Length: 120
Image 1 (cartoon, rainbow, N blue to C red):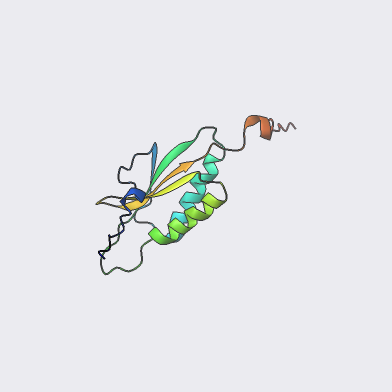
Image 2 (image 1 turned 120 degrees about the vertical axis):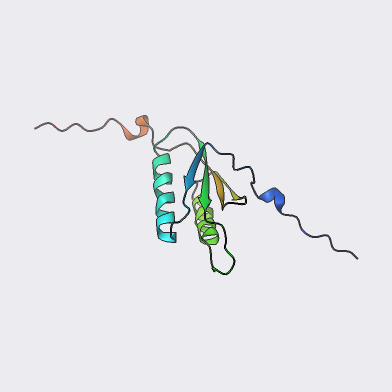
C-alpha cells in the first residue's frame, strides 16, 4: 500500500496579509515576549479588532534553536486566555512568524468610568 505524504500547507499562511506588522527580527526571546505583551496590552484598550503579522528570524542551518517554537507556545497560551482570537504560522523566504487576530479590547469608556480629576 502506497502511503500518501501528509500535506500541512493549508495550515501555513504564506500571504502575510495583515493590517499591522510587528517586526521582531534580531531580538532575543525576552525582548520578543515583552514586545508581544505590550502589543496585547495596548489592544486591550482598543475597540476594534485587528490582524498582526509577527515577523521572526528565519531558521539558519547550523545556528540551532529559533524563536519560532517558544513564541508559538506563548501565543497558544494567549489564545487559551482569550487575548488572541486566532493564530496561524507564517512563512516566506525571508522570515517566519505568525499571523494573529486580536479581539476588540475589553475596557471601554463605559466600563472604566471617567478619569479622576484631582484638584489642589
